[in-house]
Image (tube, rainbow, N blue to C red; front, top):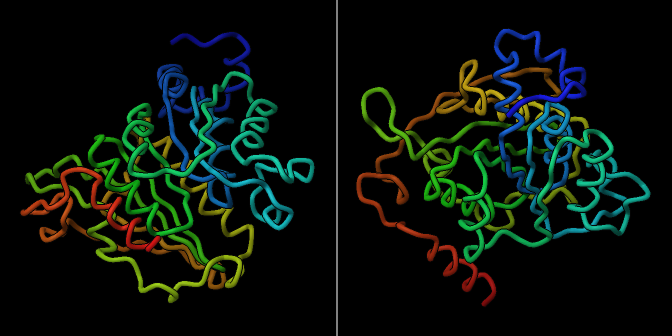
Length: 275
């Protein structure tokens, strides 16, 4: 996929990087990335992927922009209040880089549509804000054999990692998934939502921007991947740290005895939750 003269001028600061160059920039132009959530994490992620020249960005979010989003969800602006987040984000991409195509899903990701949507992309970046979606995205990416860059954020902290659970490591063991890192969601009510706990907007910016870096690295195969490593950020202490984690042979997705072969278990969870 060749670059136009305008694109060469636009991306020249990346083109001079030996890790990227013309070949890498063409890979970015050909790449398709799905971003789950156009909120605090998705906002910087979407903007930096568009600025970097990722050819197609899919955005899935069923919410609309509200005034209290704008303190951290920087892909939106005051004029976007009341507009669907997907359309608001797409408009921001168009203003920033008209060479980037968008595909919008103004709906929730559910078991019935997850594989069909995720299968259209080369990589998924999860910036969702609830555990049900995180487990669903993880399982769907494993079944669809798609890399997953995962990020989460708290009031003054955040964490980030990459999953390629459909692959094996150098000794033949499966690589870990989200279920290896977090086998079970926390008990209901123990993790306060952002609306109650609060958040410093710039912290979401830090973690979302780091997620964009990891997406580019995965698309180009450069640097050291965060597969098997959880990057932790503590804003109040101004500290980064990394924790290693591995495959859990007892996990139900890609453990020694697989119990999950499709997404039907998520439908059962939704039925119990609604009941």
